[in-house]
Structure formats: C-alpha cells, structure tokens
Image 1 (cartoon, rainbow, N blue to C red):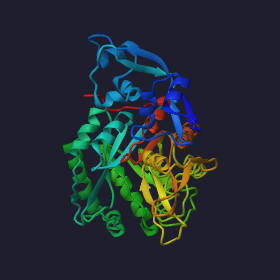
Image 2: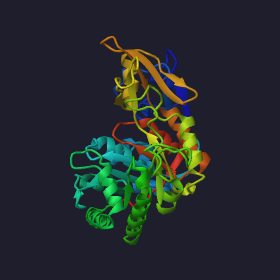
Image 3: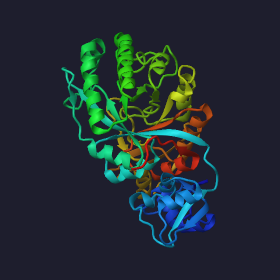
Image 4: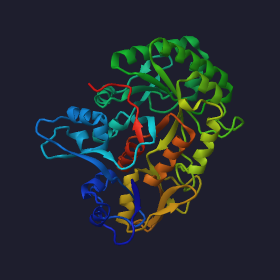
Length: 430
C-alpha cells in the first residue's frame, strides 16, 4: 500500500503508470469519479494487487473464494465494484490479495439515520461487523417512538452485518430530552416497560443488539444511570442480545462538565459488552476552526480509557465528516457547515486551492475564497488521518472502531480498512 500526496503535474493516468495499477482502481479506491482533476496536496491510497484471478466460465464468487481460502465478503471488500453487481463474466479480473498483509482482525461498527442514501449504505455494509440504526426514543409512558428501519435491517443481513438498535432520549419532535432521560433512570417500572417494548421490536424486526446513547447525563443522575445500565444489560443478556454504551471522550476520572461527569468509564465498562469512545467533535459546528478529531486529543482519551476498561471492549470513534467555517470566526455568530470528506476535496478542486496537512493534528485542511468573496477554512479527514486512528487501534489493542456516521461517501477509508485489517463478521451471508 502506498499513500501518494499529489504534486503539481500528477494525473490519474501518470500515477497508474508509475505504480502499475489501473486508472479505474485509483478512481474507485479514492472516490474520484466526478472530480474535475487531482488537487495538489490531496492524499491518495494506491493498493498494489499481489494475486489476481481471471474469472473462468461457470465460476462464482463462492467457488473463487473457496479456491483461494478466502470469503465472499473479503472478495467484495477488495473488489468494490462487486458490491453493486455480483454477476461475474469470463475474463473479468478479481483482486484476491494486495501487497501487504492485514495487521489483525477487528470489529467495525457504523451509525446511520434511516434516511441514508441506500447506495452509500450498500457501499459501507461489507466492511461492517455491526450496523447501528439511529434511533428509537420513548414516550413518557414507555412506548417506543417508531422509525422506518426494516429495509435497513434487511440490507444489513444481505452483507453479513449485525443490525443494532439504538436507544436515546430523542423525543417525538426530534429533540433530546434530559428530563425524560432522568425520569427513565429513576423509574424502574418505566425502565421495564421500555425494555419490554425494545425486546418485542428487536425480536420482531431481527435486531441483534442494543446501543445505549445517552449524552449530557446530569451529575445527580449518575448513579441512577448506572443502575439503569445494569438493568437493561441484564435483561438484554437474558434474551441473547449484547449491549454497547456510547461514552463521552474523557481524559481523566475527575473531568468536569455535563458531558463527562456521569459517564464513569470503569463502572460502565464493567457493565457493558462494548463501549464506543466518541472521539470526535473537537472541531464542531459552533466552535473555532480546527480538526474534528486531532490525533493527540484522541490518543489522550484512549490512553485514559485503557486504564479503566478492558481493551477488548473498546471501540474507537471515527468521524466521517468535516466542517467548512466562514472566516473570521466569531464565537456565538459563526456556524460551520458539515460536509463529507469527498465533498471537501471537490470544494478544493472547484476553487483551485492546494490541500495542506497539519502534522500535529494529523489532519488535512485548506482555505478558499467563496463566490460571495468570503474566506473559508475546511478541516476534514483523509486516508492519512484515518491511518493515524487505525494505528491507535493497533497500538492499544482495541476491539475496533465505530464510524459516526455513514451518511456520506468515503471510499478511501474502506480501501484502507480492508488493507490494514480483517473485518470480524458475526452474521452469515443469506
């Protein structure tokens, strides 16, 4: 694997010749379709095929996988064009292995809202262990607030990803209610009503696990929150379901603030089967321009987490988005726009500006002038910043990573993931 940083004069054609790979492979692995030209400073992942199979008459993905001692899912991961069309034609070339071996097997989770573009979701699912669908809330009486999730659950099974139900304090009008969450934590009868309703939906629809996502829990509710987690986890286990809890990105047990104090790492880690560290949003909508997930900050959270929670339970949060800020930044006035990582590259290309890389944050950024003559700065993720996060998973021996979120395309991320790791699958293909 090569990470190539584009220089002046580079083209997809020249890079294909230089590295001995096809232009189509570079385009596919980096999401370059529709991009007018390469951008100076843009990072590209170049995967070098080591073993290539030429499809013969009558061969199937299953027969080819068996021939090489691999799996159909691994073939989809290494040949993304098959994700949308598994029909094979004689003479078609399939990559079986790339140069360089995966480091290890990890679990991979991805979050999405029910309105996700189905093509974007389909592109992601082969690379996921779990697919968490956002999400169910509950009424004051404990009834679940329904969502349109059955199609997503069915798609999840098509790609051997386990569908996971997410529970939060989201209300009927789409906002989050701290008071409703507090009532749930202190009312065992309400808890049991919610849990019984969750179990009924999970059994009916085919969910395989639960994700508990309660953020900004009040400090006075901390102990009740732990008792709630014990209750819901016990009942989920009794019914054969596993439980993940999402945790704010803490760096110490004494960390102050509404986001952190009730998220007691050691206690929650002892209860849950897995936890997701929400290691993103240092750069955020209303904050000053900076990387969404600067690597030193992420490292601090992981270094603390592994002292509190078994590493085999920890999932590292990975952002799949960036922000575009208008300059100059004014706190309370400036509001950044959320953008996709591939969209960021197109913005740079459309404005003919080079991409820079912050060596400390290990994140890419660039500045440009918009048509309305306002100056902007964009921070986003690319293959280099994602590799830094993957390296933390390996260094600390974490269970894996979880993406917030899957709503925007990020082709080079999936190419890097399939090169560096084998993805754990707990569901069989239909």
